[in-house]
Amino acid sequence: MYNWHQPVSAMLNGATIISEANYGFGPRKITDGTVLVPRYEKHAPVVNGRPPIAPLTPDVDGLPDDLPDSLKIVKQFNFASQDAPVEIGFTKDYGEIFSVDQGHGWQRDLTQQNRWRRLSPPRLLPDTYMLIRTHDIWECELPNGKYVVDLSIGDSVHEQSGQNVTVEDVPLFRDVTTPQGCFAEKSVQIEVRDGRLTLEIGLEGSQTNTCLNWLRVAK
Image 1 (cartoon, rainbow, N blue to C red):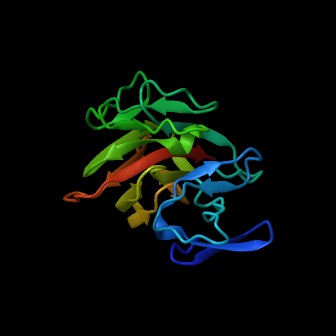
Image 2: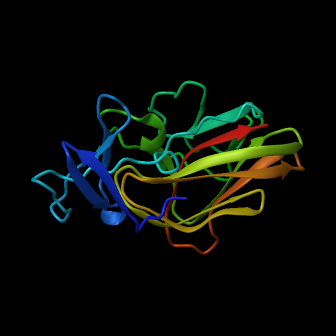
Image 3: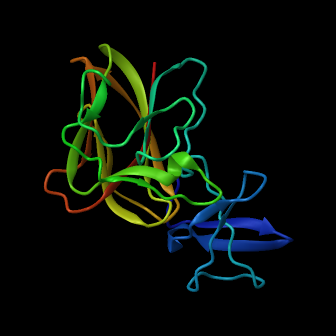
């Protein structure tokens, strides 16, 4: 797992560019889609007159990794604003209360807490999220059984601290800080016993934000 305090280095025109991941650069993809060039901020270190380049590793880029051949996708959700485009292969959740008709949703109405950052060039999955300010519960209907759940938290525009996620009573993230433009991604194997996958976002009594980008269920 990536160490937020470990310097990241990259080569640019023969010069080694050093940056610290926790300076809070906002990443933007360049044309080849493989290198992320952070926006320059005045407090950032500069080498040879250039702002630093910090490539994001797959575990912090806010994008789902490829599944092993042994697993198949069951469901995928993108937590986004109502007017955001629908990511191919994903169901968009913008904060509606759980209903049997749609088979997923929240314990209460959160339709005012979805976000779409609208960055350019667009990266829909990491640029959208559900903003949980204290503690909320999301559920999805699933047949009983064992599943692998992976998800991403973070914000492409701001640092977010004190984020917490629990999946089927398994603590997945606790007090996690994601720098601006970086994300935290994890997978966990869980067992559904009551016909619903249950996520707790945040902690009861918490006063910090948790930004839930997307969720994937595989089996």
